[in-house]
Length: 162
Image (cartoon, rainbow, N blue to C red; front, top):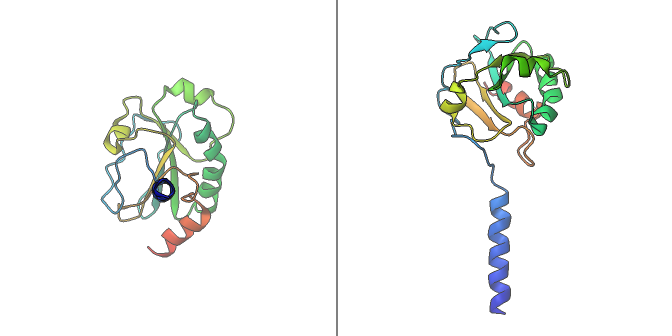
């Protein structure tokens, strides 16, 4: 009986732990966002004033990053009046430009010095942050994390509650 109780306690603890949102970076939620610094824009530099900004830290070799691109394209096109989507890779310009599929329809930049990655202490990708028009981080995480996915409903709620 004692073994069963111990097993139930362990399973309960493991279950509750798996329900927590895990991020692979320092949390900046509800804090002023660091300045957006990149090495080079691969697209035109976006106008971010008065808009939400979604920053996606990604890489061409990262399967989950590439899987998120079509969804980020949807966000970019659907919310273009209120949300700027920016993909930032720490890879070389040529490496990023050689990636043809999936096509990124949103803003793109490189930062081989990883300055913004270091500021946010990004340890794993993909990692996204959403910054509101006042410069406060209002969402952060892995866009497809089970139970904490970044969805249109999430973005709608962020925009509506601004």
